[in-house]
Image (cartoon, rainbow, N blue to C red; front, side):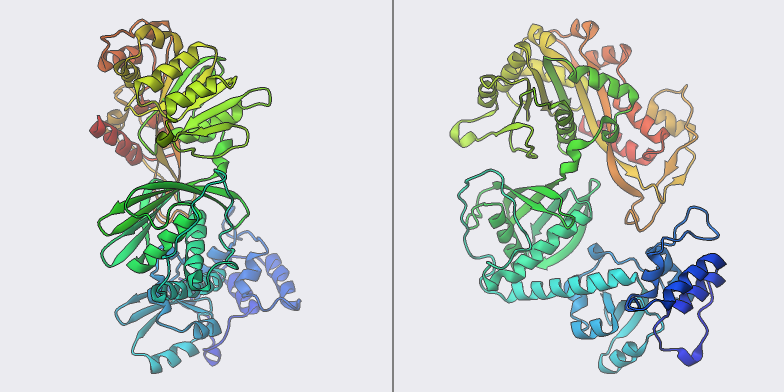
Length: 601
């Protein structure tokens, strides 16, 4: 650890740019030329209100003794923490009880010294600061409060941002808790259009009594967007309510809100989604379309469910950027991409994507439809619900209450002169039979099933009552897929996989463990999980003459699978092994997916 900056006479002072330059030069993080460039900043006027670390980070300098490393703000903050001999902290709102920390120190006092309480444990309070040599506040607070203060060094921009956000949210939670009418009002649930853009931050026309809830909902959604959450869960409990985000397939507890506040938040979201706010006894579905901080439009699908302690609400977040993912970005390697492109290039026939809920089927189909859609083609979908609205498609949503089911929807689309049809899901004979007839009459049909693997989908169609000869004539191929977490590129670490473990994954004792395998590390970028993002793994069954000959009324899934593997179908485990060998994910991650599949089977 670098030695602390010595200067007893200036024990309580704000750090200056000259001090930072001297320290960086002494610790060989910058060279003389870079130091001279930074000294030029010190001579400028009008910029000294910014923290010195921010000024240095804005110069985009490289680390003098570590090639390729940048002196970004987080690295500089770590350096400052080492100089001050204090712990470094990257502020993570998902690990902070906002209501608790903001009740310790008044907002005006925190803003005066630009300090931020980040944790409370008994009488011990952790305070984040970007000025490690300013200690006036510590002595003042110690005289007035029977608390022990523990200082940590954090990014100055993060402190400024979260200082405002935390106290605003803490105040909103308290205000919503005290508001007797929060969440109690009804809402106009009439639907004039399926899609409507909601301005989350617009509270000018909101009842003043409800503004606390509006701000709380706005912050919750924007933070979920920033954290790349795919789902938001609002779960009522006896005294409090849990707020959880699903990130890279894993749920994380974000906050606990008073039960009354959680109810008000759910009511606000239901109003935005044009649901019946008063009705809490039956499930409801809705959607919200809004914008993130960068102006990007984001869609959310809402689903409510009555539970023992109140109404639970889950929001699934859809990022429009998934519509423009290439096959490589979806996870297809060269072999699988060639098979997939071959199937969807056909002018007619049926392509099936199968897998459990949350396995990426929607992303694969929408990305493919987006690439297939051209001005000269009529692309139509029938879904329940519509996952993502796109102006290039003609999208119909199923409404069972008025008799509009999947089969009726497909028959309607066939009278609309379609070229490509997507059927959201096949669950019964009528829908399956209608989709097969559409594929046989000159249309390309993309659809989904819920089965464990590709060969099982053939048996599923037969079990639904589809005649083998119709299935042979219409089915082009089946893709079974799953999602695995991808390694964080910043902290992944090389590893060696034992031959026995590798053979357990591949099922082939002749294959050698890869030399370029990695294991998960830990860093701030990935929230110390070692993973960042997800990618697909695939099993593709092409319906050629050999496989078609095996499609009989008495066919068994096991027999069909063995024949497909002998004919060259790469199993899911082969796709998983390829991802490990390429360094995209870990042995442990793919084994957890495969073990889950064995348990499901």
